[in-house]
Image (cartoon, rainbow, N blue to C red; front, side, top):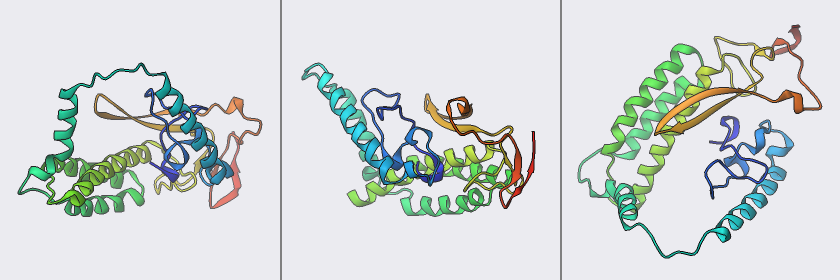
Length: 228
């Protein structure tokens, strides 16, 4: 995920919760930095990129030297990755991609009925992914890209449905106000046991030197505010 959609959560060393996996730049949440801010530009990419590389190298060097590799696990992953090449008939990745594009019409025009419709569309498309087929390695890459696209789209739809307000690039037609009383929160997506979960966390405003006012206002007319 990237841009307004956020990214992988990292700590100050660009490490994720999975040991050995680091993220940087627009692929990360850049420690909760606001999209389009200075930190989210080249400076943020350079800093998180440097720290991610350093952390990954330290993790690799700290691993015990071993020649033991699970052949069964390697074969399982190989079979999963190359499975579309073994299907002579199936669903083409471009067909599913077209369906995802249709779902995004409902994600972009954000209101509850449309977002729920998008969730239904994406769920149906996800059921088709085990039938993906590819004639060559180029098409195989497309198969895996479209599976990732579905997951990203599902996460975006769920997060957009959960956030009942308008903020920056997230505009809810049924909740057009920016709500600093109730929605100074992060919306988090994560997979647990293969299932996508979406929940909110309070932003630790108490750590900030400059704090937003606890008001509700129209982002198109920010001068008109409803005080707490």
